Amino acid sequence: MKPKLRVTQTKSTIAEPQRFRLNLKGLGLRGVGSQVVVDNTPSFRGAVKRVLHLVKVEEVDNG
Image (cartoon, rainbow, N blue to C red; front, side, top):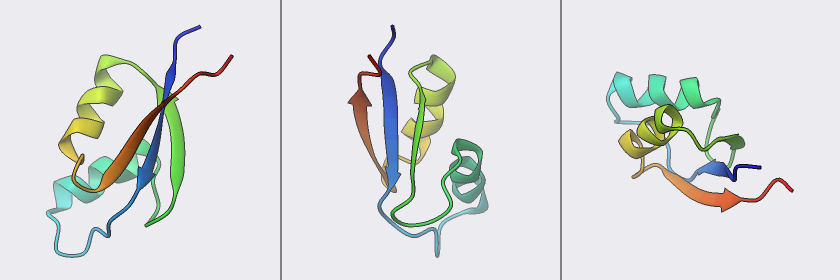
């Protein structure tokens, strides 16, 4: 099985551009401290890369 990514929002979106807020919403994050586990695909990696300054990313093995 492919490893997945656990994405945790660590910073607020206050004073951030709307595109970053929408990006976090698309990942399923709702606020500081919220976590989501997503597939390790190029599309999700690209979305995470745009908001890397607001999140913490860990690789998790779902086995």
